[in-house]
Length: 293
Image (cartoon, rainbow, N blue to C red; front, side, top):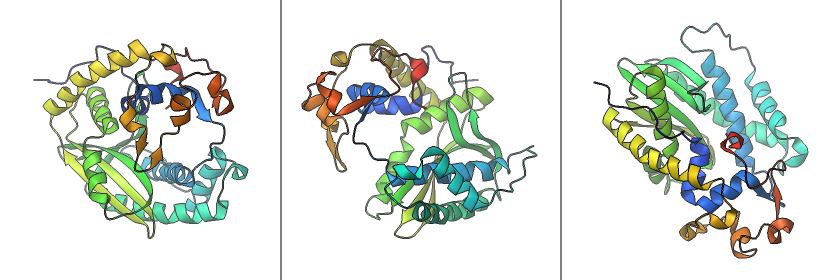
């Protein structure tokens, strides 16, 4: 008997939802503003470049595909960096970025190659539904049905690696993917997996997998319905109406990037204009169609 049910409320992008769950004020601002002095972080550039490389390589391994993987990894990674971020906007030399990305890419490919000795690639970055959510990788291993998400971290720290793995087991994004993939393929996902790629001090590739049940996916979905409904009710409102989760204003990485918007400008958009720019000229009353991917 099928356990997982269709959505009642319109699902929200998992990336948008994760920001909103952290703090509704942060989620609202992140869709509409960015700091005027924002500098592109090298680790984000590296993550995108490596993910593009994985996508191209994995697509060539997909069941029934006729795609031939002929891209030189150096060209693939370099192209991804240059296409998304002009070198003038980076605070690292592009040669350093490419060399670092290639090391992580190579480690990841070796690990994924070992996986594919027993797994078949079903889909790579494929839209899961009309809301355009995309899982990095969907595979099957016998009766197992697996969703994998790539996560690139700049630095490996043995103190935090175990907690990173435990956190991945309860990732909103991965459970969202498990739900949507189960609906699309009419087949419950049996495992969620995070592919961690660490770049320094030496490159590492770690696959962390967790077995899940169909009932667990439906339990997650029923809770998600509540949060989706809350998001739809609040996100079109004014900034001043958005709740603040103040315990997330500071964490081990420092202040929230919108700390000054909330505490210095006191959530006044005019007072914050010197510190933050609007994204794409959007007003505060944008719609879900403008969600960040």
